[in-house]
Image (tube, rainbow, N blue to C red; front, side, top):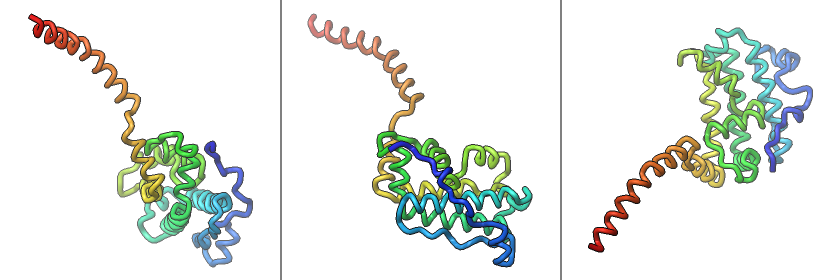
Length: 206
């Protein structure tokens, strides 16, 4: 099954709207967690709508508020609400998510590739490359905690017997760099080994 993106499946009227927040009494109040019914497609659309809208609200905050999310405030509310939704979705659908990203296990994606494939296929589930590039510009105390969101995703993958085993196998496979190094080393060693074997063979005949 090819990697699919649900960006065009996110319904209009997503949560976190100004009207909904105003009705709750504060523009920083998060809505209830998305309602999951166990169906992968509908749960995906529901969660990605929730997470995408939450990220949009985060992006509207001043930089100093976004990077002070560890203190109680709007950024903390948005991040914690989104993380709760991510955990619920991963707990239900980790194996199906992995199946989508690896085309039924046919592709062995290492951690970096798997994480960024998920960011593309499931908007809001994990940080994008651009978000991680921005995160690296800040010292540790001022980061938004995007690594936490990557960690939640990997928690979901590794706790699944099927997805976890497949990911570990992918990490144990040689990378192109390692494979080229092995081939170069083997090519360099082969003539010497051959000469030694030939010398040993001829010596035993004399």
